Every structure is written in C-alpha cells, then in structure tokens.
Image 1 (cartoon, rainbow, N blue to C red):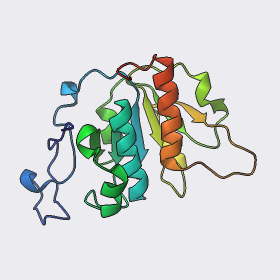
Image 2: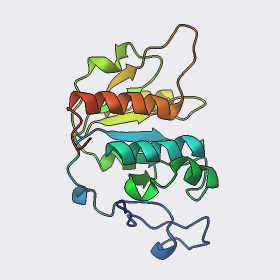
Image 3: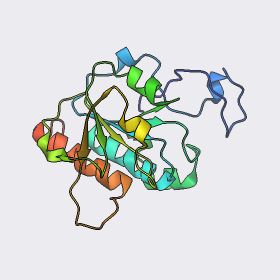
Length: 194
C-alpha cells in the first residue's frame, strides 16, 4: 500500500464526506512529509493535470520506478475516475502518490529541493542536468503546459526541455515524465531496479 493517510481535511466528492471527515477523504496524502522514506529518485509533480488516463499512466510510472508522484490541485478529474484506475491497472497500491491543494503547498513539503520545470520554451536540455534524489520534476497540464506565473516561481531552479522535431507542439505528459525519470534513474545506476 502506498503512503495513503490524510494530511488535511477535505470533503470527498465521491463519498459525500464533509470537510474534516477524514474517513471519507479519497485522496492519497502523507500526513507528515518528514516521515517519507529518503528518495532515491527525483519527485514527479503534475501541476493541475486534466486527463485521467495520463495520470493513471503516471501512477504506473511511479510504481515501476519508485519515484513519488505529486498531483497539484485542482485536478481535472476525480481520483475515482474509471479511466484513471484503468490506466493505472493494478499499480495504484504500489505507487507513492500525494495530492496537494496548490503549488506552494506541494513545494512546502519539499523544502530545499531543486525544482526543474519542463517546458518547450526552455533552452537547457533535460540531459544537461545531473539529477539528485529529491529533485522535483515539474510538468504542466496537458493542453497548455506550465503557465507563466508557475514558470516565474521563485523556487524554480531551471527550465528544461526535451528535444523534439521542429514544428511539433509537445509530447504526451506522462511520456515526457517517463523520459525524464528514466534519465534520472539511469544517471543514478537504476537503484532498486532489476
């Protein structure tokens, strides 16, 4: 089972729970971020993801690599969404997933960590970075990418790009996250992998 304990009161849209009703809180959380195991990989953070299938695939990515997935609200779907569960297959219980009220709340749980924003407008390639455990790999919503206010956030360490053929708009969100996570894991020598 992943780290799934309530960290803040919330109403459950699917269970009809009241704010503060932790039994009805459907979202995965870590009550005390200091209780997280030490990371061996960077954290993957999706800012306001909107497509449940992409997030389901990211849950699989987190499960198979050991990276922790952070979802920044508002989400464009309910965590009980059938497409999310279908895309995640039976990996939901094997992934470490946290949901945060906003970007500042998410980053506050990762103090001092470097934050790399992935955007097609960057000039630094994702392969030019020597990744460290605990780094944050930040990705924007599927149709738009990261907004300018996020790209100007004071916690950002750098903006990174994944090279593509000219004239192409973007990669699929989880494909981009997979490329970045596997590069970080490769650099580390694939700890925990077999």
